[in-house]
Length: 50
Image 1 (tube, rainbow, N blue to C red):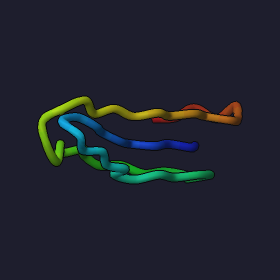
Image 2 (tube, helix red, strand yellow):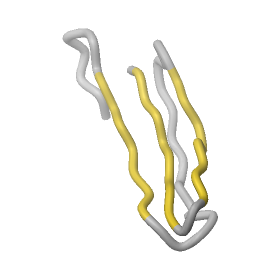
Image 3 (cartoon, helix red, strand yellow):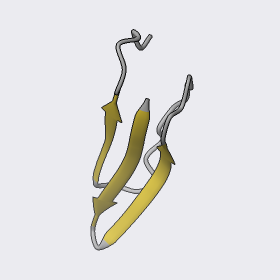
Image 4 (cartoon, one colour):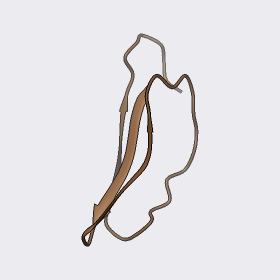
């Protein structure tokens, strides 16, 4: 799985974490500041992501 967690707002931006070809992971995104925070996930194979 590929992923990117990020945020921006009030002239600030942050890249929390990126991953490529990650077999598994878990965690929590805690906003570093007030603004927009989001994520992108992509599963490039036929295996189920849990």
